Image 1: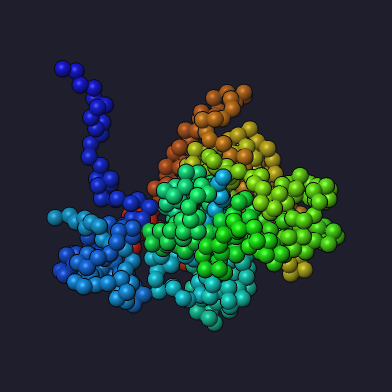
Image 2: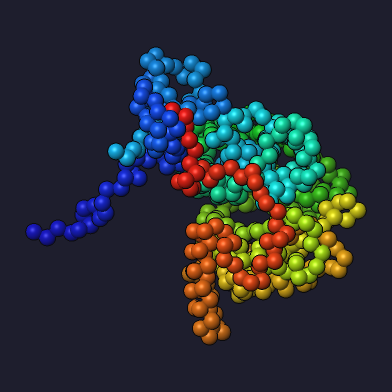
Length: 96
Length: 413
């Protein structure tokens, strides 16, 4: 049976499309230091999506003392809790 | 019928700098032009200190030090990246977006439903997604949308002039020289007809306007009355011009030095044009100096067979430098502007191509590759070298957070 190639994906999987849901809102950052609680190691590449809605349990980049810092939002966190969320960490990229 | 919206980024360059440096919030911040010549963007706190737009940095340096003003060198790569992100967001909300400048875009929105609500949603989304605060003006015409966005800054972010009575009140309160496209000169001529406010101007009879300001003035008056004359440049060219300019570290007083400076700017501009796949159909050179302590300037231009060839543009720039040079004048700044840009493939045939063009193109590819990997200006044409001596150093540029992997921001974990 003849199957036209273009009926199927004409290119391989695109990691960028997978990791970056909202290109206009997505920024890359590097983790300085480790935070077991947030599951982040020193040097990890963070894919930060500012368009994602922060929610309890999510790992975020927050503004703390004028600095960008990685945090895991505690259970029961609410938007008016005072923690200034910069963006939600959508993915953590790490070499083994 | 459609409504126009003008989305204007507030203090755009400063706002971009603050995204990755939250400690700059609520502090006075200024962004300086290439080589720290003058102030090109100010935070509200810096404006409140009395730092003027385009003020030469040396004039405000003491004030800046006294009030701990953060003075940052322009990081155009960063601003272009944020501009692109914002345009991308706008295209989610409106089918046609005209990128009018790096920090302003016009949109058309269908005039149904609650337009104010839609504008607020756009403003909130841009703020959340990019961190950049914007002002949005809504109106039945472009000129009114521009006016509305200017007023929106003070009104909290979004202002609509769609309602005729709101519009009438606003026009009566607005001095005519605050209207988009009305220069001081035009305002003076209008004053002879008793025009002070934008409303006075809109009320003037068309023949009078035609006589004083020409057909452009008539069109503007119609726009202010609410009749749309200007449409969106649907496929706005990505760039209308390429400008490279510098304030000189030391004043330039010789023709040779001025020629060398503008030649290096032309080489830089040519490289940028090639990077964007553009050719220039016009080149102009401008110069600046001080007369009786006041900044003064002059400029001169040439039409060209569209080109992005470094040596051709350098030649043109040097010729214009010759026209602008005046013995005994200490030039403080100069610049090269490429205009009448067109895409490379739309180019006209070069009638006198004897193979030099192809050789030149190959050489330019090497030049651009080396400069891209080793930093701008690593390789340059002989004539451009002299400019190095007069270029002062810019030291306060922030990292290219969003365009260079080695410079992405860090988050403390």
